[in-house]
Amino acid sequence: MAVTTAPKLRLGVNVDHVATLRNARGGRLPDPVRAARLAIEAGADGITAHLREDRRHIRDDDMARLRAEIARPLNFEMAATDEMVGIALAIRPHAVCLVPEKREERTTEGGLDVAGNREKIAHAIRLLKAANIRVSLFIAADPAQIEAAAAIGAPVIEIHTGAWCEHLADGERGAAAGEWDNIRKGAALAAQLGLEVHAGHGLDYATAEEIAAIPQIVELNIGHFLIGESVFVGLEAAVKAMRDAMDRGRARVLA
Image (cartoon, rainbow, N blue to C red; front, side):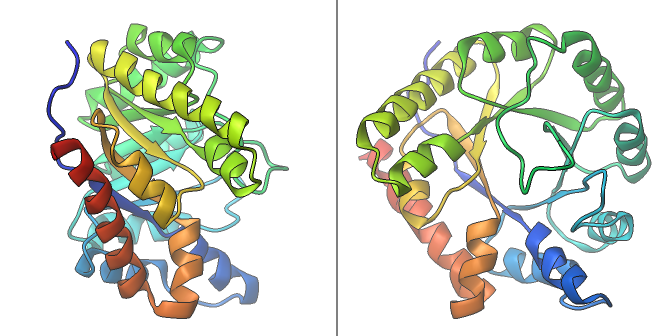
């Protein structure tokens, strides 16, 4: 059944790049856990952090502290490896988002290939769900990937919005329109299949406001832009401005 009303749109703030700044110099500061608390005070509904294999930004002790010290759900982004599944089972975050990961990439590029790695991803999902951890899969808005996610028992998908954002930034209107159509149709398909739909990657105030008008999407996860913007306006102001942009976009659905 198609979604006819728009549920509350949640904001997850990714604090990875507070840790990137800390690690550039070494030591303890700036502290990503402090950033998470500030984001929550400013209106974030949850906190996202990606523990990468190479520990380039978030570290194991950051994840443990976030789980213990923040007052909102923690979304643990990670690759579907035995090591990361074991860490997640030990920390017991509210949610895990399975993402593709390559050592040489600067950030997560492209979506998870669920259709091509069903057995491995399904095994991780079973272990995490058994521990009452909500599992999402970070995938492109590709019908084959969405259908595969539903088939292997993932309750949630997060649609990769990076290509759409990049085409918009480069002024490639035709390509951006095509990606937007994919996102809109992908969200509708996922909802029809019973999946909860999230979105993220590359979003700023303008693109978050636009995507907030897709009624099936119930959560946006945003990090790099907010941490960069906070250098100029402060994290509290950046998060509040993002919340306002999302609310303006959501109001279009309800008008």
